[in-house]
Image (cartoon, one colour):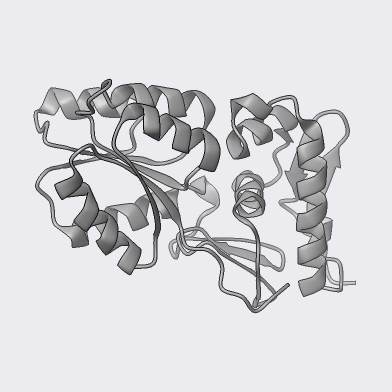
Length: 242
């Protein structure tokens, strides 16, 4: 299916103070982000397991346990960007959070424009070296805008579900590299699905079908190579036009 706007970037915002969280979440939603809110580390963990957001905004001073436990948990499973939002402004606090696996640190109080700029930068970097200066990854006829969560094939917008989008992002961010089934499952679905290989078969098939609908020549679907018994990779040398 084409011609339908892709879903906005999905943010998990973890902040226990309602007076702080509500206006920030509303501002981010007004700028096109999908925001899921959590007030405790427990809520954040459940949201992470269930939804696999594109980026996490994380306060460290949570009522049930320190926010760094969330950083460590996420880093065991994924490279999802984590932006710390904390009143702890001392250098050792920033260093500790970054060493534990956070990607950026913003000390309260902060401006909303700066927050949005930091989010945009982190989303662009999420694709690794495959992302260009405009925040896009392009392989053959397929272009993904990481921050806007849009995928185009030969300039034609393709509608993907959040799981399909995440699967394509993981593969495109590692062109030419085999990504094992276990790593793909953990990155897209979480540790509880590390043995559910049939999930990958179903979702890769759906992804191939949607790309084929946008590119009848087959070049888009030919980008995907199955490595039997191992996983999948995306060609770094896409096939030429027939």
